[in-house]
Image (cartoon, rainbow, N blue to C red; front, side):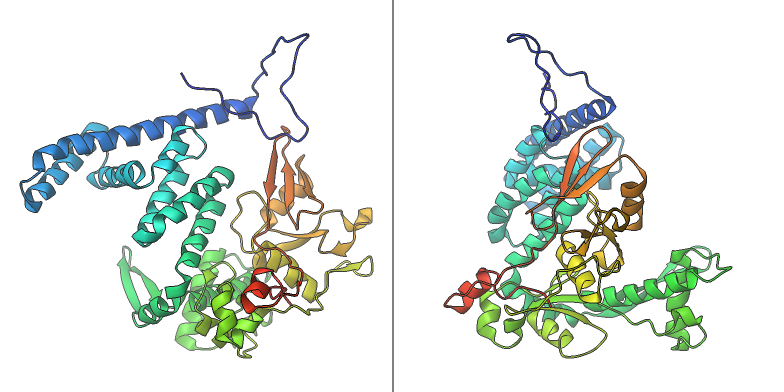
Length: 443
C-alpha cells in the first residue's frame, strides 16, 4: 500500500481539523495529484532497480567458478534478456543493470531514499553516475552528504552541488590531475550529415567557458541590431567562424566590437601569497565551473584585465547599499549580488548570475532601496514570472540572501545563494582564520 505524499510546504499552513478529535483529510488539488503520481513513480523505480539487481545476481550464479570469459558471455546474455523483455535497446538495458548494481550494492541509502520517495529516480541516477567517477575510498563519505542534498534540492541544483562536493574532496590532487589533463588538450572535427561538421575543442574548462561567454555576448549584441533574424545559436556559430577564420571583429556592428571574455574567479587572497594559507583554506572557484587548481587561479589573478577577480580580504570595503540615492546598483554592488548568488535565484535554475538581470525585490517605484538586502539576480524568464504572475517572491530576513517563492497554489520553495557574505573574525592561526570566513569577503 502506497502512503500518501507529505503535505506541501506551505508557510503557516496545516491540515484542517474538524470538531473534537475528528480528522478531516485535505482535498487534493491539481498539484497534489501530480505529486502523488511522482511519488508512485519513485517507489516503482526503486522496486524495478531492486528486482533488476536480484535478477542479475541470480542469473550470474551459473558463471561462478567458470572463468572471466564465461562471466562476460553470461553478462551479455543477461543484458540481452533484459532488453528483449523490456523492449528497450541493449545499451539501455546495460545502463539499467549498471545503475541497479551501483544503487543496490554500493549506495543502498540512496536506494532507500528512492523507495521512500524522498528523492526522484533522476536524483538516484546522478548519485550512481557521479559517485562511480569518484575514487572508491571517498564514496562512503560523499554518499553521507549526497543523500540529504538530494532530498532537499531540485535536480539541477543537486547535480552541481554533488559535483562541487566531489571536486572539493579531491582538491588535494586537483593540481596534479589538472596538469596531466592539460597535456591532452586538442581539437577534433566530427562529421555530420548534409555537408555539416562539428568542431570539438578539449581544453582547460576556464578557457572553454571564457570562449563561450565571449561568443554569447557578441552574438547577443548582434541580435539586438535592427533587422537581425538569426537565432542566438546561429549567431554564436557565425561569430566563432568569423573569429577563427578572419581573426578580427572589425567587420562586426559597433555594438558587438570590443567585447572580451570574462570569467569570475573567487580566491582566498592570502592563498595567492602563501602556500600555508592555500593548504588551510578552500580551493579557488570559477563561477559556473567549480574548483580550479591554485596555479590557474594565480595565473588568472595576475593582472589581466580580461578576468574579473573576486578576491577575498578581511578588511574589505565592499558596497552593501546605496539606499535611495541610485536606482542602478553600482558595479561593486552588482558584482557582490551576483557573486553571492552564483546562479539565478529562481527555483532550480542553472543560469549563471553573470547572465542575469539585477532585480529589486521591493520595486523602486514602491520605495524599494538599492542594496544587498533588496537586490537579487534573476534570469529573464524568472524575472517575467516574478513580475507578471501570482507568484510571491521575497528575500528572507536574516537568511543571508535566501529567497522564498510562494506559488499561486500556496506552496513555498526556498532558494538559497551559493555563498554567504562573510564577517571577519580575528583568530590565531592561518587555518582558523580561513575557517572562520575572515578571508572570504569579496572586493
